Image 1 (cartoon, rainbow, N blue to C red):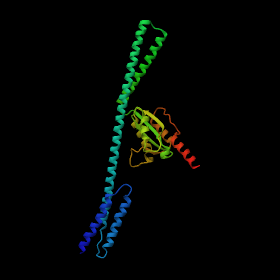
Image 2: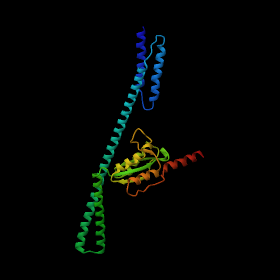
Image 3: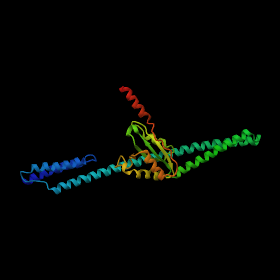
Image 4: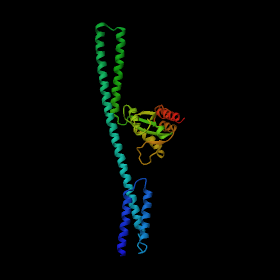
Length: 286
């Protein structure tokens, strides 16, 4: 009978432990430990009459198993976040590729247009001579073609240099409060598109740009900023959640130490919709 009681109580304890371990998450690990300890205490009370108890080393093993399951869940979550980040990066690269293709197509079309216009103008000059008006038009067309050549070189450079891009410093006072900044980077030709995407329906207000810094090595500048504010990340678990509790002056100082060109910062965010919402709320409550 004692052996039957041992088996029954052990089965009950193991069952409760399995359920607790199966449900462990980042926000309930301490509660889960207490559940296992409490379960052991209750089981031992039931076995007191027959001097049946659970060895402390066995309880400790269950707690170790709980922490292993917790670490596994954390690892799974980390892998999910990494996969999500990889997919986001792939989408960004696809958008960049499309932007480059469209920009190059547009520039080539403009180049063909101005080349033909210059060809026609040179024919007119050959036929009528170099009048002041024709010379001015020729200079204008040559300037346009020179600018187009520069644009083509810029596009070729952006396509070839995987590190060239923009480091952005943005805030969202209405969503996160004062002195919370997101510091990230994008290789997009139009970096504002990336910022606009971040301010989609997932946050109540759009982001304000404090700085948009073009760098030949944007990942290095971004990494320097992230390292400088490592201990002030809002999310200490997921490194890709690039929000930091810092002041703009501190950001300026780190940029100055790691970037040798002048950067224009916007000190005060417009936060237009947020400020308008506050005024509207005040009027409603008045």
